[in-house]
Every structure is written in structure tokens, then in C-alpha cells.
Length: 461
Image (tube, rainbow, N blue to C red; front, side):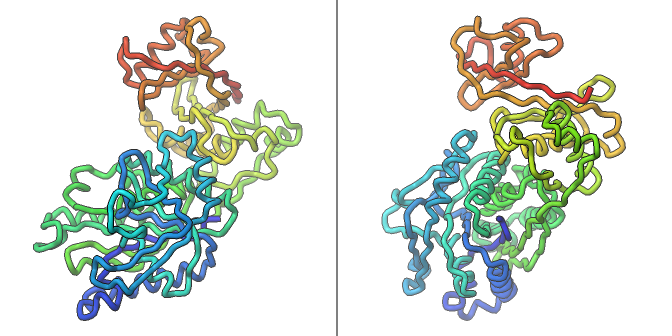
């Protein structure tokens, strides 16, 4: 169970033996880090995930160290006698491999995180500085050390969700430490120069985290991010992905920028979700084991709760056996016979099918870019259908396709286009493939891999 996410800066100067006479200038950050360390200790985690910007940063994906034990010291700051170590949880590594095996963004598992850089220690200062304060507070536990990748924000966010699934499967109370500094350009003479937009970036980032505006954070103006010269945004995004589609309680502990670099200390407490109760007719569907109405009824109940309270509910237990399995699913919303929203997953991205439906129902209502978000008062006017996808099967002959019977996936490199089966106006294989290509931005004539799948569709009406 995920207990706490901490956001922490990593200037070596906040370590008392290193900062010395300069320590007074970062007093708020030092006190903030000690307060954060106490919060970590109080939730009694048995596993720690550290996300840092200063390990080996790759374009392929986040870099995860799999060495049994990592070591580091502060030699680069002139203090080789300050040493730290961190033990890797091997079971969590294996679970993360399983959870990301079919994800579009996969981590790179490295035996030696800094094998390409002679003379570097295994633990970077982005991890060691906050780890110093945790161990000072008496918290010395194993876990996972990783560096974010230079990947799109939303891919890193989704990776965070996969990391959360691995953590939940591990079954130990866990905490996350997302290391990163904010703008490096706050004042003239700052390490990366000065930009008047540096303070703007810091202000907005703190606002987005404090006010839980995750969509805005994921859509940060690239120009503003570049101007800020930050190093922590991607760490924070992975951490926030670990609480995707759930609510959290934010606490901004401290913020200051005395040397021209923004230092934010914050704690995010994941909420355990509120329960909801199925209506009597929905209970009947559950007890009879008939999924014909259960899937759309589940989607509707989740949507009602989310539109009422703004949080994801916990799913009703026990689940029907088939909903404890994993599968991709699409949720479609229609109003007066016209599409009002449709979002889905080609392959399973969540712990079970019920959770897949719940998350995609909310996404269909508020995240389909083709439509404005569904309003609470609209829900009674919507009809809901759920499509559950079979595993994909690669085909090499168009004769094996049938647009009424099979959905289709086309892939070319990282581009993927999907079309569900039995859609009005799609009567031939050529039409089906052409639409799927266009959705993926794949030009006619470009070579593609083609997959087919079947769909089981459950509708209210």
C-alpha cells in the first residue's frame, strides 16, 4: 500500500557538514526536509522508491538500478567521509518488469547505473541528499532507485501507474521520494543564468501540485519549462502517476530560492478512496453473475461518484470472477444517439478488468479531447456501453479480417491506430484499415503490422 509521496530538493549545501556557514540561508529547506523525514518515519513504510534526475538519464525510458546494494558519498563536494547506501528490493524489480512488459514505455534495467561513467558512485546526489535526511531520522529501508527518462510527460505518468501496480502487488507499505529542484534561474547570478519566467514556473508548479491540477501539470508550456531550467518536473510526474485517477491530500512544507534555485519540500498523502453502493438492480446483476448490465452499471456508478465528489471510489467487493481478470476495455458514452465520449485501453493497464472499466469511464467523460467534459446533470441523459477486448492476434493476410467481427490495430514503429469492430459506416476491410492508419498518422504505403481482436460489448440500451 502506498502511504506517502515526498517531493524533495537535493542541494548538497543543506547537509549541515557541507553547508556550514551557508546553512542559515537555507534554514527553511533544512527544517522542511527534517519535517518531511519525520512524516516518512511516522507512516512506517517498509519499502522506499527514489526517483532522481541525476542518475543515468536515457531516452529509452526510466533507468532502474538492479544492483543488490547501492553506495555513494559526497566526494564531488569535498566530503568523501559522508557515505550512504541503499538496498534494492529484488522482488519489486521483478514485479516492475512484469507490469511494464506490455506497456508502451518500458524502463531500462541497469546492472550498474553509472557503468558508462568511470569514477562515479552508484548513488547520485539527487538521491543521496534526501536519503541523508531519511536515514538521519532513523528510516533505513530497501526499495528501488530510478532515474526518470527523457520521455513525454504523459508516458512517464502512465509509467508511474505501472510502478504503483508493482508496489501494490509487492504487498508492503511503501513511500515514494521524488527528488528534484525547481527553476535554476530565479535571480541574477543563478547557476543557469537568470530568466524572469523562472519564478513563474515555480509558482505554477506549486499551484498545480497544491490544487491537484494534474492535467495542467502534464500540459506545461514547453517554452516555460525550458526558460525555467528545472530538473524535477519529470520526477514529480512519475510520482503523481502512482496516484493517477485517485485523490490525495497535499501539504506544502516549505519553498525558498536563496541561491537562485527553487527548493520545494512537499508531502502528498494518497487517500484510500471512498466506497460507493450499487443500486438494487445493479446488486441483482452482481449476484446473478450476469455481466450484461454489470459492466455499464459499474461504469455509471463510478461516474456518478466522480461527478458528485471529484474522487475515484473503491470498487465494490467481491468482484465477479471475470472482472478480477485483466483485459483492455473501452467505455463509450452516447447522448441522444450521438457519441459524447469514448476512451479505452488496447491492452490492460490496471490491476483488473473492473478497475480498467472504472478508470476508462472517468476518462471518457472528462478526458476525450473531442468533447467538453461531461457535466453532472448530463449523466441521466447518457447511455453507456463497455467493450471488452480479447488479446490481439497478429495477422498477415487481409482475408483474415472482418470489420463486423474483428477490431483492428495497425502499428508502425511507435505509432498505433485502433478501430473497434461493427461500427456504423465501416463496411469493408479497406475502410477499416484506412481509418486506423489515419488515426495513427500512418501514411498510405507505409509498412504496418496488423493485429485483430474480438470485442464483447455490453450496453445499457
